[in-house]
Length: 148
Image 1 (cartoon, one colour):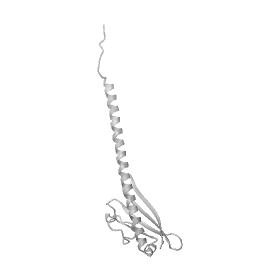
Image 2 (cartoon, one colour; image 1 turned 45 degrees about the vertical axis):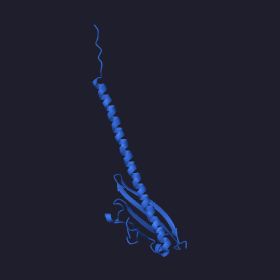
Image 3 (cartoon, helix red, strand yellow; image 1 turned 30 degrees about the vertical axis):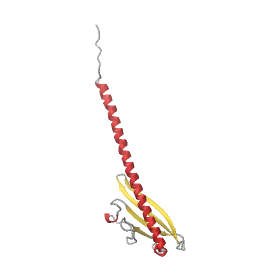
Image 4 (cartoon, helix red, strand yellow; image 1 turned 90 degrees about the vertical axis):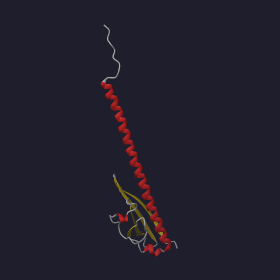
């Protein structure tokens, strides 16, 4: 008696193939999600660093106008929003959106007198933001001197 050979796929083979395809799809989705999150963080980090650099350049220009205006503000923190870089908003940024940059970032500059002669000021600008993975900061520090 001849045995009839069966052709085709067994149920186990089909389920195994589907499981492998499903694992590949899940891995691709996960890699895409991680990539998009990293891209979003990098974009926010670059924007925050640009906001911090903008504040340092503005403070440097203020130093060039009037050194006494800078040295007299040493020991003070200022909230510097996007629309008006000015000395008017003294203190830490409040929680409301009136002091945020683009509704997302907060920029604070702290001036600290360095040395006893009052001819050097440390300027520390912190731009912070929050996303799904927590709070982040971009911090830039520079030293200004009375060069005139």
